[in-house]
Amino acid sequence: MIAHQIIILLFIGYIIYTIDLKREYFPVPVVLVLTGIGLSFIPFFDSLHISKDIIFNVFLPALLFTSAYQFPLKQLKEYAGIIAALSTLGLMATALLLGFGIYLVSAPFLDLTMTASFLLAAILIPTDPVSVTAILKQSTGEEEIADVVEAESMVNDGTSIVIFTILLSMYETGNGFSLGKFVIDFLLVSIGGIAIGFVLGWLLCKVIHLTHHRTYQVMLSIIIAYGGFYIAEAVGVSGVLATVVAGITLAFEFEKVIKDNHMKESLDGFWDIIIPTVLSVLFLMIGIQAAEYLAFPHWWLAVIIFILSIVARFIVLGGFIYTVPAWKNEFTNDFSATSLLTWAGIKGTMSIALLLWLEGTVSEGDALIISLAFAAVLLSLVLQSIGIYPLTKFLNKKRA
Image 1 (spheres, rainbow, N blue to C red):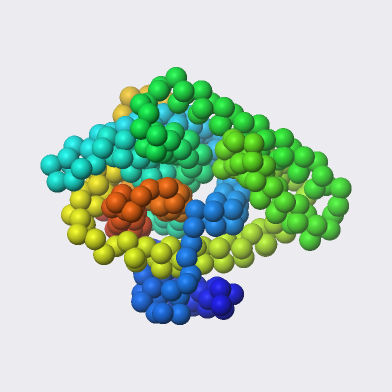
Image 2: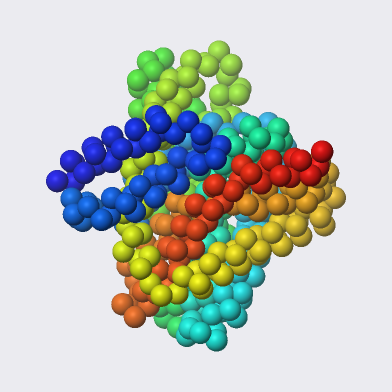
């Protein structure tokens, strides 16, 4: 039954990718999620459920590895400082602002504890650029903004997981927050993931030259993409960072060895097929899963939380861009850059994985947190994806 359902989802995804000719107005992932919500009313799909383990173990390594090894190194080197800052200190500051905001706005109406509010914030801070980066490049002509958004989303997934797991432990045990423990855990998990990713990426760069058979080179990339993730998670460090660093290490190898361009072409040929396949199934299943949580009476609060997530990100981004001269000079227009970086910070795959992780641990009485998270993520995915194109056009006219 599951095999039949997956094949049908793939066929639906193929149709949507084929007929969606106006992606600048309505990106494919949005169509897939809304279609998935519609499919949830068909009994045939009742038994189809997506879990945190499926997202982490099946979908995420492929998405992360492909984004990492295909990312342009020139831009990565140029914007390394702001990317690293936004993905670590920026993400923590956003979580802090958003957590306090959620606690304050919900207090008069719902009994959300401070820990629950910060846990909800941790679910909503990772970003997923889906197809908005292509829209930014086409409509603004300023590729630096799209590159920062894409690179930030690769790295901040690892940070968000660390923040989430610490807050989840506090939520389950009732223990207070320890800054020292948080910093130590964050450094161990992050440095460990980076180290494993670098070692595996270096090994891939050496071993991949032992054969010129393109099929075997693709096989090696699959082993590293998934093997690095699994090894890192098994030893208790960041699988996300391990996979991203392995992909970036491979990108450096491609830049260094020009004669092996055919190798990158082979990998692109494989992964460029895998990614839309993965995204089709993933976002359709997210839509199917979300439907059961969206019928709840507190949509007004979900809307407020979504707005707060935009405001918190804008404040943090503005603080970084306006206060650091080197980063301020990176963009031709400070307000425009801050606005686009804020709006392009869409919640997506990682947020869904984290809330499904929470789903497996909270009691039935705490299911409202899941519904609020699902609703806020859905609002982000739909409204920000649809709005990115008109926003870029509006800001371009204003600057002109």
